[in-house]
Length: 135
Image (cartoon, rainbow, N blue to C red; front, side, top):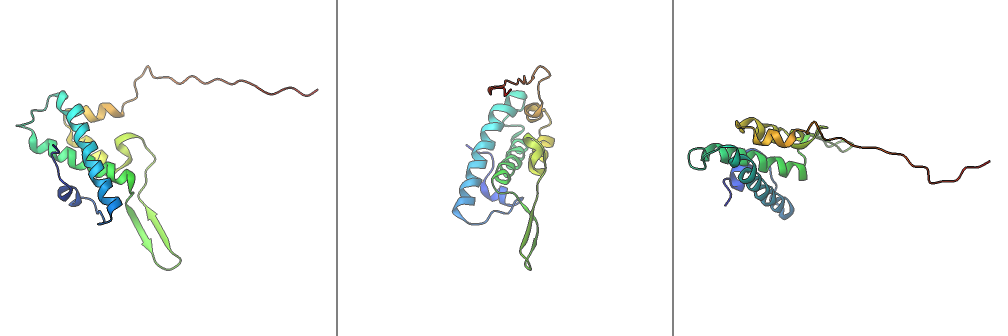
């Protein structure tokens, strides 16, 4: 069962009453709940003692996942129709301010570990020529 609700998430992020946005918010809450359950709690949180903190982490994670689906507007303009959305080139939870806040609230560091790239992770690149040479 989720620790947060769509009412709580809507307090920090604007969600239009369109079915696609409402569904995306519900999906974000489910994903956030799963992440808190499987990442945060095993790092030492007590579900009873730390219930308020876990609910806050889940709320910001849900907003993060919603904003991945529907990026926030930073500015609008009517004449010549212009719209600017919030965007950040980054990975993981650092993509949105809500993900960053969730990591900050997670004082035990479980979420931060998800964003770390293991030092042994390496990418092997290769190049093969499949054409024929002209002479």
